Length: 312
Image 1: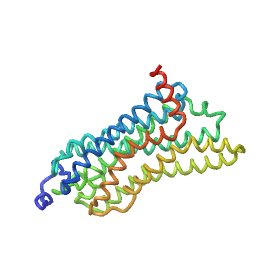
Image 2 (image 1 turned 90 degrees about the vertical axis):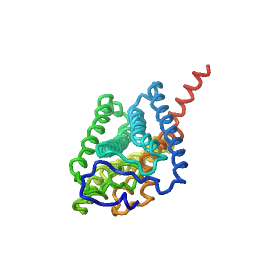
Image 3 (image 1 turned 135 degrees about the vertical axis):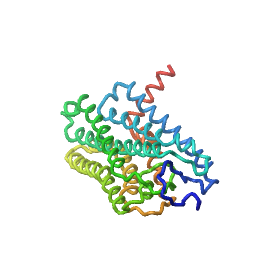
Image 4 (image 1 turned 120 degrees about the horizontal axis):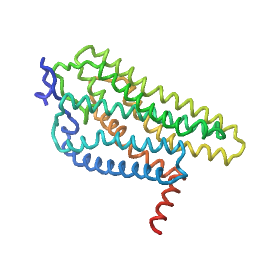
């Protein structure tokens, strides 16, 4: 590894990904786990998209955004897992400078889109519970489409910011102690003003994580207030049940993301950070369809109806 970490004055044209190259025995287990997780992610999210499209009772704003989330999770997982699998048994694989930055941009874009989309889904639940009589009017098809499109466009614009702002010169430092070109791992290689690079990463993190999370938190505070005004206990439980799946997804996604990107960063890349990053980018897209199918009566009911049709 000493030859790999040598510093020179040449301009970096490619990066070396460490991954699990220092732990060859773990590569097989990691590869098998990725194959299983990726398969479940594709099937689970694909089923949700199919069910929402087929079942007329699920043609509501809530399930429109859920199908968007499922499509996003497929894209998010596909942006990283095939590359991880292709490098599964390679020691210190390389990736070109351009490909590395493209991978980082796509990952940022999809991650930010999920942050914003989860915030939009929280707003949808707020309107449904606080204004049930005007819900279909306030959240009509045009509004839902505009909100969904705005999340994708806003996330794309935010994802471009680091590419413009992060210094392009790495002064020969080209060994990324990670599985992929993750932004925090790249920031550790920047040879210019390190404090400025860390500040930049923190500013981007605050704009794309705490702000949507704060909006979700405020939305749920208002949801709780609205539910407490309902007299019927059964109606209260029904209102809370419509939010339970979304709240579980938000907790898992934002919990791991905030830990990864808002905590103070150091020059040393720890194996713990790599594992959490994989959980955030690979495992979470697999868990989302499982959470929504296991905890959502409407989705389970739609699956039963489709199964019965095929059997008959």
